[in-house]
Length: 197
Image 1 (spheres, helix red, strand yellow):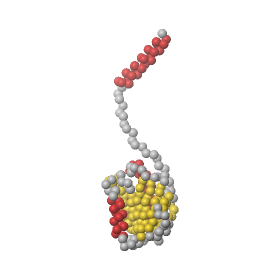
Image 2 (cartoon, rainbow, N blue to C red):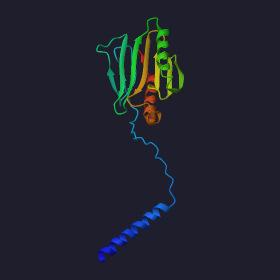
Image 3 (cartoon, one colour):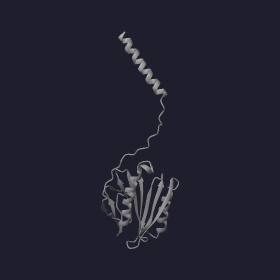
Image 4 (cartoon, helix red, strand yellow):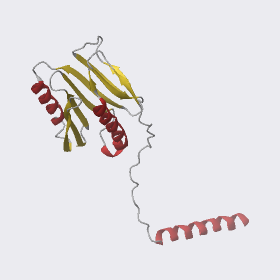
């Protein structure tokens, strides 16, 4: 009898709970927004990079320089500025100008415009510093482009440097925004401090 009473009580409580659940007002359900991992970025500190090629530039102390040529040359140099924790690389190519400045500038424009199909906008900023003989253009490419930032710098007579930022992740502007701004500041500092030798 005692077992029957306990069993009936459990059934009764279960039925009342089910009945209450079915009759209550349903709550609105909202999807959670996408979340991204918090990225702790270090302070901006720089060290000099002086290859055999005739230029000096500041590189983030947080990044590694990867030389891509087995033998360094004075008239050409290819290297990456690699940010291991941020999964980003700035591909850099230095070339000596040999009466081909128009072609080098056209190539830089072509490389930037290849991202136009995925870009929502391309902001071009002219770089002019006659006192240091530094001229060029910065391309800030907005949207889902593979390379959101590209620059070229030249003295217009004998030296030409092109840099393009790439991430090793999908180009989602929301998730890479803090990292992009961090590296963009580094590249602005590079632009402001590069010197030709």
